[in-house]
Amino acid sequence: MTNVLIVEDDAAIARSLSDFLAGEGFSCTLAGGQAEALALFDASRFDIVLLDVSLTDGSGFVVCSAIKRMSDVPVIFLTASGDEHSVVTGLELGADDYIAKPFRPRELVSRMKSVLRRAGKIRSVVELGSVRVDIDKANVTKNGVDLCLSALEYRLLLTFINNRGIALTRAQLLEHIWDAAGDFVNDNTLTVYIKRLRDKLEDDPQEPTLIKTVRGVGYKLD
Image (cartoon, rainbow, N blue to C red; front, side, top):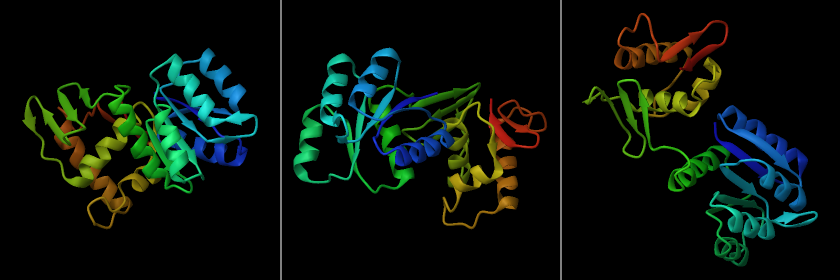
């Protein structure tokens, strides 16, 4: 699981962001200021840092500079300060990306994954037994043969990969694949696409070993 340090002095914003990212399969730790952020970073291992510029006891620029001196962990600035000076300062200090508030949560997740891939923190190729998923090329093969997934099937598979080992409810899955190909997606449609995906991925779709049903909850990728 990807470990995220969120440095944000607005507790409500920090908690809301943490809750959303947890639902996307990230493990989040919160820091309310400069001193706490640096202490946590020194004591624990993180894969990425989301960092506000304005902190009550210091500056996000100071935190970014310190982190980059200690490690190669990617840093994304999240701030209401969208002026050119702040952007340039953050990037010159080594920040990997800069997103101005307010931002769309799913755009943030996409940008986080892009930064993580560039930093080598997550793999662009995922092996699921005989199934190979090349995320950068959006290509899925089984025993070397292209599975030719539809847009909705592929997005559903990516949702499982990004939440590997986590039981996802049908509502969560629907939220992720909604309108991926310009089609209306409902609960019945989800059932159809789960079956189609199993038919293509599993050696025995009647006894799935990859996409498993979690009774009373939903599904998960083992």
